[in-house]
Image (cartoon, rainbow over all chains, first blue to last red; front, side, top):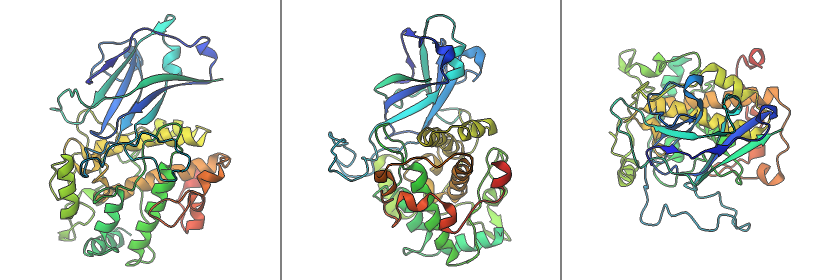
Length: 147
Length: 245
């Protein structure tokens, strides 16, 4: 996708008392391009040029340092289906999707209301970099709170 | 120091066997296998920091075969907000600057092309393009304050990625895992990452790692995670870490 905008998400109850709140972007693909994914709260219109400040709801970012494609033969980049095999002592497949944390404690405290939206804008380098529809893939978002 | 670094790097770049620059750069990415470890899922322990420490160690030892007193310098991108002149100058003393660029071997380039990476064989950088940024000092301070090692590691890995994208831009080698280590500035960047980890270690109690984690081999290097935790056991340390810590 070229950009992700969530629906309304319930704010963690008592968010002001949490020591830390993380957004965990689960299962992020890193087999392709390298880019910065910028996260904004309550700003569904955020784009690549939106300033990274409180007024725009900027919450943080994660970076994908990508593999740029598959260098091997057919099947080389196929990810095994059973990564939890305890008898398999190999490192996880290098292209196994990643979980990327973004610490959003302060940004979440600035959210007004009981719900908020998340906008994720992938930003590629270069002034002529087109908005790309094929760089941002992830399986889900989790909210992790620390008391 | 700079002249010695250039001498050792140029010497390594002139060697085509497993003592040379192509061999060491290729371990990170192409030619296959890609051995580096980066992004992982939460249920997998992150080996990003220990793997790259082992990598730096063996690369530095290779350079020391030429200059026994050499230490790999770090690029503090929180202070030097451009590519340092030592790496940006095309010429040094009237000769090719080996820290500026190097030609990537044909096997790696052929495999890169197979992946769809159509970069020139000579390493290029396009630093500071729109849409890129270097980490700020406050971001490093923030990550250094994190008490949990794996949280620290994952957030630091994000900052590390910003630098790869900033240096490489849209058409540079540093932006792509398979080719990044061919750029001579890769090593100075990762020395900075390793230095930040060292500073973090000085500020926080040792983590309670599992024995499985500690005993994991950092392939292809004959070292385990436990063996790279203390830089002094590897024979080096970073200057000025006491004042920073």
